[in-house]
Image (cartoon, rainbow, N blue to C red):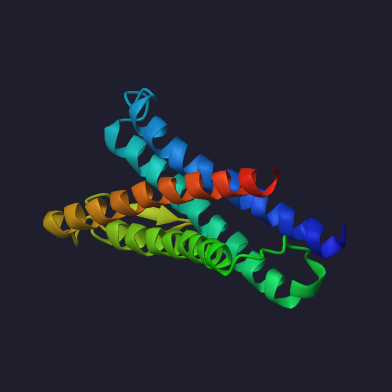
Length: 167
């Protein structure tokens, strides 16, 4: 195992944990915590801001992983796939995983821009309640939720493929 491989795997698992945190925490933070402690609006703001902060960190990790893999491609061992159709399927799934993460980021930022809440990320206002379009927010939310559903399926295919490769 090379240092390049170890860092590649580390970035992979950091991004995996961040993704799972984002997918599982947002709903639980909004629906399971007692919002009466801070108030409903502040509670939602906190949940969305944590979600956005983790999302920004995830994008940073994924871009780092893409750059790292490009720089050290020859030093990161990969399974050799003999079947061209299988190899193409793997490439498509991997591309879609990255594409959907970036689509989720874009739809999330656009959704935040149309939110009725005042949202801040690291002290910078990313959404003002003065500018809101509930219809557009609702459409963007549906798109965001669609990408989340697609992402869960891609995760399932990715895990099944990893298990198949290790058999």
